[in-house]
Length: 371
Image (cartoon, rainbow, N blue to C red):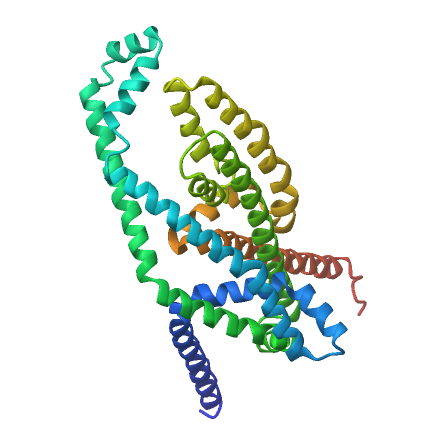
């Protein structure tokens, strides 16, 4: 009975820890995006903060404030400028669709007249739809697209206050992560129920994956979106910034990426008779945008995550489906931690088996004792 009381107290204490931790995480869920990006920015700008701390003779508070100011100037201000311009172009595109400046019948008629005779014969032979049916389908698609754009714009307008609050929380937490990040990491290491080796391995994996995923994907997305937007602008296509940002976001998906945007547009240009523009866009997409992805993604993303491309693709898609735009970080991070934890488990199990095998061999090779 005396042994049961300490065990019951220990089990009760563990249950209390688990319940309080779940409640605290549940409390933070509304601001998980702000906290996630505070951690990401703290990891990315950690070299700058350390350099400032050294230059300022160890004054961590001042160095942390300057680091936050650098994050605002480098990340937030350009992001706000791009977001405002993007909203303006999206509004103009929506107004153009709603005012019927883009006529589905005219688009189809132009494309149909530009098709070679053998393609038209194939359409009729395989009964792929009459002109009226295609017009109705395209009109329905444009209507749904315009409704989606309108709903997104309304959501952005309604979420302005929440966005400001989230940015405030992010910057506030970011300051303390800069100032107290090292001591916080040491406390997490001491409080972890795992062994020091396992804790250090998982924390290092977390840091390396976040840095590689964000730096690599953001650099690749920025380059591809910029090239695509400039190409759209010089080809005379409307809302070049909107499509450039769309290509930048979609470039977060390995293998497919920005081709989801420039591919259909190139096909449309060719079918509508703009053969030179379509060929130029295809050349830029394949030889420039695609080359950027193939050259930069392996060293920037793959080297840090050390995961196969198909794992990165599936985890990124799953993360975006579950967590929205934050999923391009959360998805690969979960996949990398999954691989890291199971690698540690396999390593420990292999070490245990080797130790057991050595012990069995020592027993069997021990000389018999004489009476």
